[in-house]
Length: 318
Image (cartoon, rainbow, N blue to C red; front, side, top):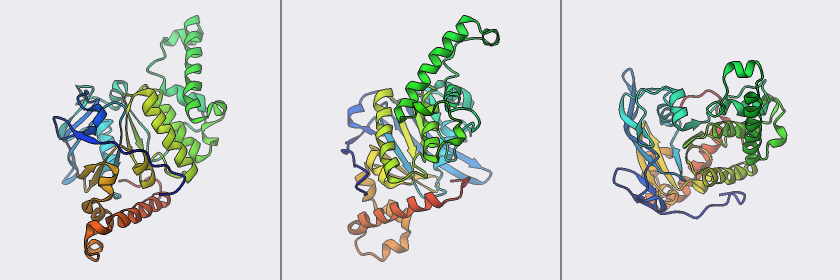
């Protein structure tokens, strides 16, 4: 792990009355997100099967796995881009079956995307204001005729946007076109826009993609800050294992659409099944005592995976 990335103190995970693991501090608390035996088929292909996940508030969980494991498909299921073929998803105890992506966002799940999806020609402020659509309270004609309620709500929205942008020290960029920002700043802007919807659960799809080590270290601090200040659950997909091992309290490993391991970062690093998923069985067999070499293998796999992520063509489906 690089000197730039500071590893956080590892928490203990405990089992709650279900197939879930949560941080010990949240034992006994209600789960904000539950996915039970989730699965989806595309024709004869099973993309995700028997996926179980439970998350409580103030929790950061990593979802990792080789390319094509089904990670983004899980995000698409949770946000209702796809309707599941089987299983259930509960958000704050409410079944999301039949909800649209808009409805599930209003209910409290927000996400960023593997490929940046901003309105390039709009300003940074206007991009964030789009995320505030759930909380701006004036009618169309009040906006058309610029009635007092319009100016009142717009003033509140402007102040809220600057407050959110300040989390990433981006308030001075509010008037700039989003498309003119550096790549890393566009990534951060996507997170700010997602936060503007007031989520209970935030899904981050490769938030550190394209960032240098210094930017990644800053992102880690900001994700922890978001978790603590907003009191939300954060589920992230990431190929940068330094970030995953340094910030996530629990990790879920997916391979060929099924969960193969759950645990703390140290447990995942030393899990021979995870090493095999990343490096292959033939590699494991070449080393006597897989558990004795899995640390080195996992680190190598992590570095290779991060390198592949930075060089992967945009639009690749996982």
